[in-house]
Length: 332
Length: 281
Image 1 (cartoon, chains in turn green, purple):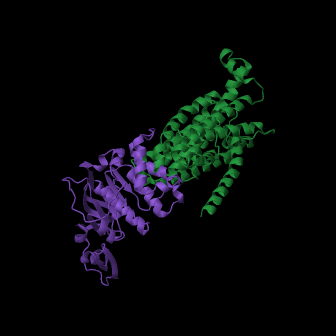
Image 2: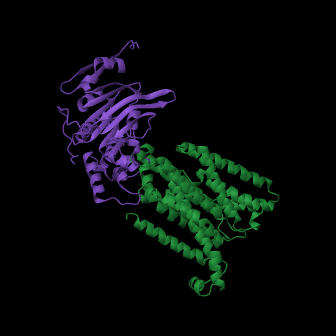
């Protein structure tokens, strides 16, 4: 397989980052002993810390990062545009709105998983609205416009909730959630996000060959036997499920879905199909690394991981643009 | 299958005509708003013939070709491939038998020539299946036939318009189609590559493929095609051998020009002047 070295390298990086992520924390625990204790003495301190605090955080970072990288690559392949991002189709806006609504009404006190659950419901609802707006035979432009409209509306409703929040403390809580965060996540959060995420991955990962054909344009892809309308909905629903579940669990985390496919594209000869798997691994690595970063940065107010990805992602993106510009100029 | 040696265009016999056409369209209609861009056209294409679809701008040539390829649905009428309804075939099955070459096609990512041509094998592969030795052979043969071997490693975005057209033609041939529908394949090519491409298409037809090509150059159409369909305002003005279709009256009525023409040393044609008074309907 052509990409074996790249995928192996990314997997090794993933494991290394997981090791670092599991080792870092307020309590210093021996990782090997803790892992053994998970099975031999499940109620020992280090086993509990590992299972209840660090494992969920690292695993959720990996799953959410992989989702964002994969969905970003899939969307860019579908739209044949390197600026597309998974948030384009409205599901992440819906997820944020759903989760914040529950926070606003204090629903998290009823059940700890109510926030992500509402986030996922919001993502599905937003997707359904986009579907209804665009119609079954929708072309790409209509689909994106419907996504943008739904995104605008969810953003407006989010602002409304912030505006009406009864106290500065409540504002802070709502706002913090939207920044994207991986701290204080639990194993039930992980179990809740996994089914939708895995289903979404399943839908997205099988589209590689069709996305390759799509680089020749929609009609030529159709002439090559790709059912373009079906492919569009498959990618749309896969992204909605996976990204919706991820955002519902972590809050909105920007730039991973945009930057990771960009970064890896030259390494897979710009082929959209090969980019899918590589972007999933790359996204997982990047979000895990960012989460390690926020834990290492000292300070009284811990930095949210979504803030760090945006802080690093935006200048990085500028660099990519400048790079691309230099290439175009020299190539012209 | 011999793809590598397109023979020189020369005197042609009528060719072995099969009883049933490979691709048959019955009374095709395509509406855009209240206008019929394609208005009740019958087409029958046989194996082993190169058929030209000609007509002025906006006559409905590209739409007709896309309808024949099953890419644009017909508002009325239907297309049969080997006697079966084209749109009833599974997508991959249709794509294996019939290739379509887009006018002014673009490639959206800077991927390599080889990979673009290999995309022609898409209908033969399952989503996770790896290309077989036969797939690779077909790709090699198509690269060879279209004279693309010299730049197979380059990315398509660095190619000239002519080179890109040849690569996309190779892509269509790599799928080993029985029917090839090409929309203005020589529009961006220089003279040498125009000849090369038309000879290649002629060779495909002589090898048994069923080829239909949208052409603007009527001298080439006369020289290389077995039959022509002359379209005018969505309707079929005439069809048959080039000599029968491209009459003085056809030039006057359809194109609104007078032409000078000759047959030596090859069929040639030059517009003399526009007709002053359009024909009275």
